[in-house]
Every structure is written in C-alpha cells, then in structure tokens.
Amino acid sequence: MELDRFFQKDRLIPAVIQEHSTGEVLMLAYMDQEALRRTLETGTTWFWSRSRGEYWNKGATSGHVQRVLSVTGDCDDDTLLVKVEQTGPACHTGAHSCFFQPLPLKDHGPDV
Image (cartoon, rainbow, N blue to C red; front, side):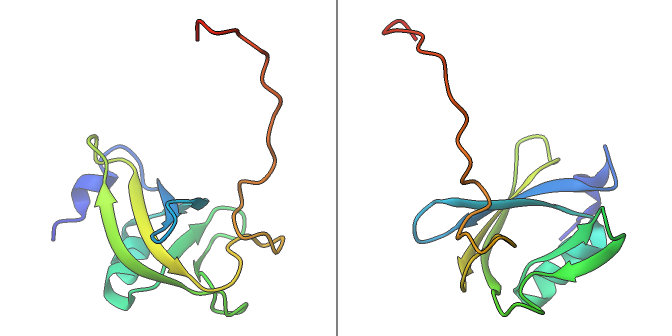
C-alpha cells in the first residue's frame, strides 16, 4: 500500500481513534509515515508525540492497548480513522475517552 499520499500536505496527520464496538471517539493523536507503517505492521496503534518528540505505542507502559481493527483514510487523504478494540481507559487521566469535558451551548431554538 502506498502511504505517501497521506503525507503530501504535512509530515503529521491527525488520527481519530474510535472504539469499534460502540462508535465512541476515544482520542485524537498524530501519525507520521513511520507511525502509520508501525501501526499497520503490528496491529496496535503507534503515534508521534509532538511534545516529547518520539514515537509511542499506545498501552506499551500502561497496558491499555489498542488493537487495530481497521484504518481508513478520509476523502482528502489527510486524516485517518482508526477503529480499535480498547483495553482499559484510552485517556491518560484514566477516563475511557479523552472527550469528557462538555462545553455549554447557547440555546439556538428550534430553527437550528
């Protein structure tokens, strides 16, 4: 599979990690071509840490592994959707998903 097409616009692309069984979005992280290659070869998620400047294999230290079931590119070849089977929490805070902090929405009435 030709992976270059996903990295034409940038060296890093967002990877949306979704729990296969529920459809819940667990996290968003970034992959470069090497992280994507490692993910496809090992069947577990690999990312590039922008803050640490290194590769990380999700769950390697915590045991909260993400077993990859599918990887799909979007229509513009610049974002990935990775469906996984999550072991334990996905978030470093201990929450199942990284998306647990709702923001208040202004009531726009029935027209929206």
